[in-house]
Image (cartoon, rainbow, N blue to C red; front, top):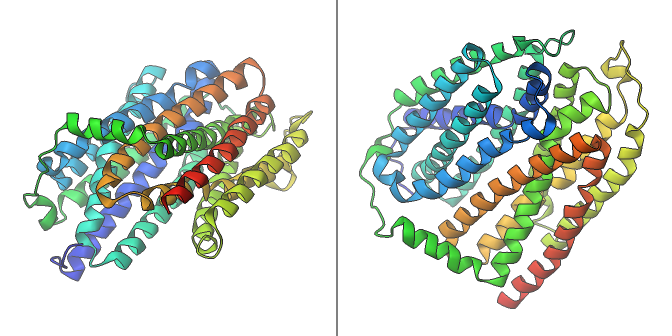
Length: 418
């Protein structure tokens, strides 16, 4: 950890900049489910075609985040943040100016590239302004919690701009004027903030991109890492599959208006936030394997108990929150049980490795998480379009079952190291 080179006022300004960066990207990254619903209605795009938006977001994140690790210290963290914010400011402003499905793809492509720059820079910056490990952990947890605030806000912000009486209306694109202004404000805040230590010349490792890639391949040869990668991949596939298509599920299966469909999805995001905050306390007292198995079994039970309630729902022109389908409130609770799984397996995996292997392991995590997110969205989209929403969400029982199995082998591999 760094010494406290910044004055308290300067440090607070840096923290504000980091939080605002993450808030903006929480909205942009997690808007994909809402945007999928809207491009289907506004541009007449099929569900399978719309599902590729997840890939346009996730694949650039995985590729760029792996590559920037080698040269980002030379580039400078503040410059990387400004570059990322400039990219998304331009692309969000272009959305209402150049409406179309192609521009929507380019938007998420730019968001993925920019977020890779932002995430690496923000995580590195936290270490530079933290005096000790406790302060680092506190700031990191607060930052991730604020990210979820952005996710929740995004659903309501987009919902406000959607015309409930004419869901196909392109008026929802006006939300991007607000987001472009927020991006520009963040750019100015970062530009006018003194990042003294960030701009200093950092020591750069002699390792090349080729060496980093070779290290990742060596890690993948270990059975423990293979089981972990499968578990992480399937979890993200599951979370993104449900999270991305939940607005469409609410609209088409539960017969809710588009604006309410988007806003109801915020329950899922809120449950994820509550689940992750609560799991930190629970897992300090209980064994991680027991907690994660309880979570997986609870998720499966919720799917089996809730989805039968979604059949034969008739559209109600006077639908309000007070008479909305019960499933709209119950099914998103799956986020409570889903939340602890991803950070749980990541913590166990990283703590079992030497510190000098954490970077390579994180590279693998980002890569396969992004691939899992893309796969989950596309598979759910194809099944949703070819069959129906209930079948698409019943399909979540398959990765759930496999994760239960992989966690058993993951636990055994961890025990061999102890």
